[in-house]
Length: 322
Image (tube, rainbow, N blue to C red; front, side, top):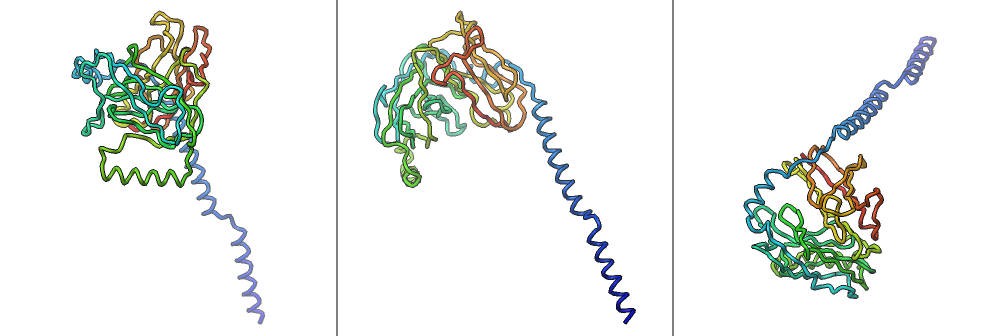
């Protein structure tokens, strides 16, 4: 009986000290997790600090494309918005856009090369959202799911690498109002399903288009100085990350280098602001992998933002994948 009690005492003591002992495995896992988190943060910080952007010449690949295009680079295309009409009131959430292309085209024609996915196209900008490319300008483009209220539409012609034509008459902007927009989720789902069926049945009969997030027009005056953000936009991969273009359309204003009084100001990832004094593309090299923000603004000679319905200060997020 004494041996049994002693034996039980030893077992109880062993259990007690085991329970009180440090949980080495658990703590080790926690430490490893914390270290991994710290390493990830340090890696992100290192990547961010390693980015050093510089303005560079137009990439040789683009220069070669310009040479191959010949007379098209001397074209002076003009655009007119046929539908919707300026000041129109539209019923329903689908806004159909039709444009008329004119001017000195010299062979310029919007169309997509199915092999390369590139081609001349029109930039369509609803409110101050990122532009939508429109390749078959002889047909209609549909903005789908447009919300109720007042909206703006801006259009201008572009090259395959998204550099805009900047001649007089190439840009047009209108305002219109939508009633009965902002369709329900169920209605949008049905509409998407119908579009898919139609696309399968007859691709040529389905207009180009895009389901749009909610937005509304700013209190913009198209007769006042206006900077329309165009590029950069979306995701850049591989060789396209070597140099990324900033491009925009400028209305009712001249930059200082062109004999005017304004400047375009840009910054990347909230960094130091830099300035553009001539209305031409700027190419930036030195990008790191990941998401980046690009802010583009129109300012006066004293550095003050020229406000125009919020459109003269635009920020876009892009993704760089080397």
